[in-house]
Structures are given as C-alpha cells and as structure tokens.
Length: 163
Image (cartoon, rainbow, N blue to C red; front, side):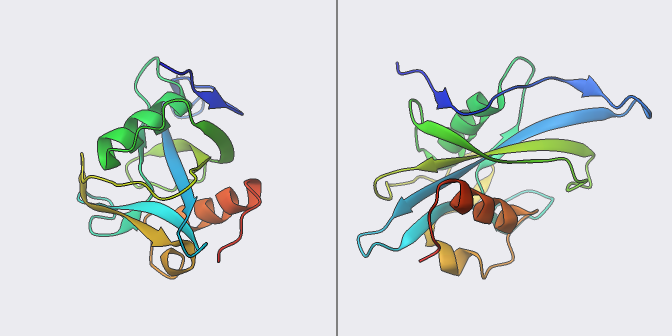
C-alpha cells in the first residue's frame, strides 16, 4: 500500500484552556479534476444529517483519537464517495478555527487533491448523493459551512482556476 504524501499534518485532542470545553478536529478533502472539456470540477456530497442536511459540501469528517487529519481526509472520502485517495498527494489548503459549527468548537484542516480526471463515485456513509460539479457551478450553490471559501483556498494553493 502506498503511503500518503502530505504537505502538513498534525492532530491532537484538547480541551479549551479557558472554558474546559472540548476542541474537536475535523478534515475536508477538496478533490479537483479537469473534465474532458478541460473544465475544473470538484467532488461534492449532499449531506443527509444536520447541520446543513440537504446542502452540498465537501467530503470530510471528525478525527478520531490517534488519526491525523490526512488519514481522516482519505478515510472519509472513501466512506462518503467510494474514492480511494491512498497515495495521492494531499496539499494543505486551509486551517480554520472560526466557530463554524453550532455543535461546538471545531478546528478544521482541509486538503486539496488533484486527480487527472473525474473518477466514478458511489453514495456512501452519511450522504444522499455524491457527484462531480463544475467548480463555477458549485460556487454558485449555497454550500455547507464555509466550503465555498475552502474550495477557493484549494484552487489558490493548487494554482488552478475556476473554469
């Protein structure tokens, strides 16, 4: 099995110093690929659970004890879409700690992954649908959380354009 290549990875479970509240860690995968028409596409999933049930967003999830953000990005992409990113280069796109989830404090690391072309997807765990979207079309949607911003960050760090 190939080892994951990452440009940044770290994880920890912690309690907020001032409040004693837990700090959760989560990860997203921004999987990008050019279509046959050379249009940049992004893989999105339609969430089936709150918050943001029914909205489209990036495949991702919460880090379990002992998992690195990169491991979670690969695991959740596979569980939610059937795509195996094992061995793919994961480029750090963003890190957020902005009170983005009403369920508590989440520190979220997002990785960009470039594929040579879109690959078949399957509907997996905790999603209604999974499909490739042209990036320009995806950015016009009301995406879950701050996923629009994360996609824009991923395009910037990979030096890719929307069209």
